[in-house]
Image (cartoon, rainbow, N blue to C red):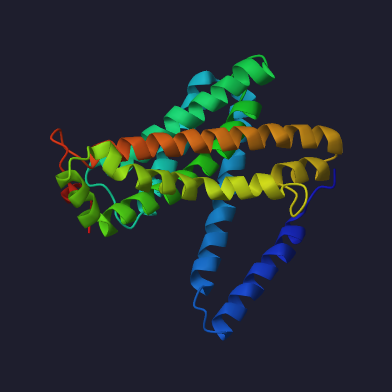
Length: 262
């Protein structure tokens, strides 16, 4: 494996700085966000590397569980922040967080206990990267699905209320919106699977190959990861939208838009 030096990383960072300069000259006005995101990403990954080194050395299940919960809560906060129409109160944060927990943690546990069967099953070199990849993609899918769902309900509120007046129950009146929102959330991972190996080489596979792993072994791991991401994302979106649709109606099947912001 070829080790990267600070100079190597600085040369790559120079390309991002050049992009920010071009953005400023062309008045795209994304240079600040671009540089801030690059700085934040670098700082977060450096800190993550230090934390993972400690976790790998100690292999303490309590510390690993704490790290997993931090990842979950940060992901839940990002789901909440990316929505234009959000649920009020704890529900705005809780729906995404609970859905990610139910899907991502279940899929990760299944993989560690049944598929990989490493000893101990919570070994951080397997558990944390797997959970991180599944959780990150599930977070993106839920964010897209929830944003589409809440905005569609708001835009079509009169249609939903008319259907309720005609005798539709809450589930029937909102089922088409839930289906389209699920579809929107799943499109990115479906596209990723359809183009993997043809249009792009996925990141994990590329990293393994660059580190000296056999290409065929890297391919097998990447196939596993794509299956896990797709299932975790799909189940997470479905869970989030099911909870959200129940939250939007009261026990008398009345639409409660006052539970959304805006």
